[in-house]
Length: 275
Image (cartoon, rainbow, N blue to C red; front, side):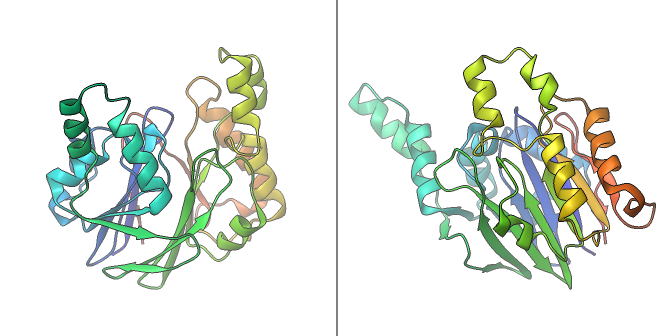
């Protein structure tokens, strides 16, 4: 059986897990090690069965728990070389003493680290992983296509717009985890400084409800059994708005058998998708 659940999704931390018959992969590590393990147990997943952690990019809401989690579970981390370097710089911070530099170097060390490149497939157990470039304001951000046991599952969050290469990778999927970050009117009238609003709305920011709806209306092939709306902003979106926008765009293609539409949560693990 193949299972996938989003353990946390939003600006305060992101992590998800994909499990096949023989392999389990954690995607991002944006919440604490303790909370990750707690949510895995709640979702019925065994942390001791994890095979690896794969990382999309270096922003804190995707990597803040990485060092502790990797050391605790003693599993390899798959990450691009540029993202690895950016993560190390973030962990080390501005050291002011020699002893502090040694401490920070130790914290920024990963015992088992594998570098990958966007566009080049790699294998973790019986799961094939294809990373693809996404438009976001990070050094080398990626989304993922996973293939296992005849299934194709894609994850694309933290992207400013639906680039052509992303649309291509999202075709023929059995499940899609896609960003529906903000409602444009809520963002424009919300509490963020104007500079942050511009960043979120930019082509290297985050995908709005309207942008995702446009993808569903014009480019989505309609074949996925499950659609997961992820990375919703707590300040600039409501779950109801994200759902309504997606439902209108999907129209008659949304039914109880195909295109089951679910929301990922910031605070609780999502009910697992099972195939």
